[in-house]
Image (cartoon, rainbow, N blue to C red; front, side, top):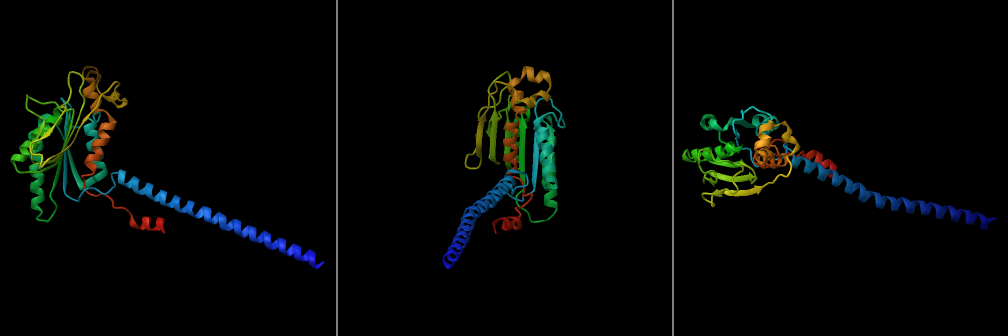
Length: 277
């Protein structure tokens, strides 16, 4: 009788030991998985913040973004990528930046706007970082960017970034040489059709201006976004229109500009701490 009871007791102890071992094994397996999942979630959250307009920008300097439309397009024509980009930037950054769009023939008006903006900043009497001026445009609007930058050089006004998209010179004036008052310049172009962009921009003074790149695009088929554009532009100037309505090009431009804009929303350190505890 005692032997049978001893066997039952030993069996119960063994079963309890096995259950305990399984629990320990399960915990040993699950804990690293849960920990890794939390870290992965945290990493994705941080990456999302970095890729969004709410990410930390380059500085908190006062910033003015000036855009120029191509051809004879009105400055408020939202069928065009230039106007769409300006609208997104203003919506996402609010009063932290000022965004203005002009027709390419309104370069003098844009110049006046910049001088007035700078004068307003000086009038506050506050100590602040060097103001940032960013210029972008397409076609004649892209060459207007370079011409305006040269005028600002004569005024001793620095420009943080110039962006040219399929730049077409106007009245025979060179649009490839970037003046020394520009810190960074980037060029996007396509080589096909009646109208095609400036393939290479150069720095007048490489020690003061960084050429971010000359990026070439070709189009066997027009991007779907081009369907909103006037039919005559799509028929006569296929490549020139395709690069203007190419979401890939303008997403890249938007990121280039955003990395030079003021910080909008810092990373929430309390959430980070909770996730990593």
